[in-house]
Image (tube, rainbow, N blue to C red):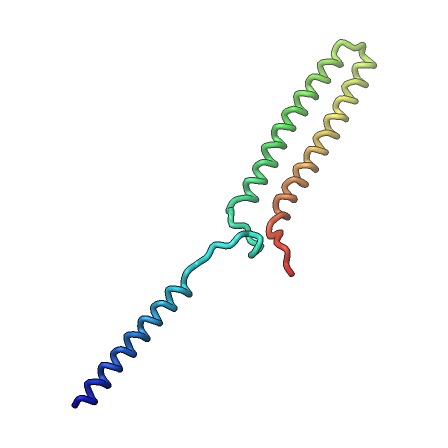
Length: 125
């Protein structure tokens, strides 16, 4: 009978120590560690491209308004001129205005493209 009790006690101790070891291992392996962007190549800040595109749109709107004001000022400057010069002045102001608007549109698209192409800039191997 003494032998049977010792086996039960040993078996209980072995099971208890295995359960404890299993618990420690599972707690150790389940801990999460935050890593920087440079390790994974993934940006952890959500909404960055949207914010960048919004900044491009806001800048475009501001520059477009400034261009519109400049065009209106140039048109007003043409008003006191005599008729043949006035028409040439207005045509030059309009041509400059259209060229500036076209350039603003190109710059806006380039800005937005730069926003979307800077994602995932990690260095792979």
